[in-house]
Amino acid sequence: MADPNFLNPHPPEFDRFLYASVGEDRNGYAVTVLSTLARLGLDPWKETAELVTLGHDGARARLGTLLAQFQDVPSLASDHGRVARDLSQLLPEGRTSGALQRTASTVADGRPGTRGAIWAVLAIIFVLYQMFMVGGSGSGE
Image (tube, rainbow, N blue to C red; front, top):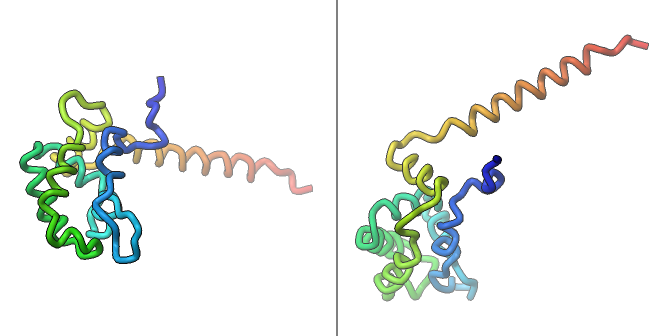
């Protein structure tokens, strides 16, 4: 049976955390954890997987450090510790999905999964083969 998250390879357990608000920026727009991590130049899903592996205390400390560096939300300057504590409670724990375990193990190993790359290469070869077969079958009339 096909993986139900094939089109969305990111673990759904991360959604509650990544789409949580960290506050409002200077223009009054809500800023999420996802956009905060991206604006800091981090891969949000990879960073979240790393936070999960740290546990709540380690995640809270790491989040506090990251949020203290983030200047786009003025209220974080004085309140980043409380926000980090609240956000760390939204991280998944206990039994996790296979996608979450793969993402976390990729972060721990430092090696990306190769399954997707293999399928991409096979798809390209198939398309090229089809183009060759269709392009070469014309009689020139």
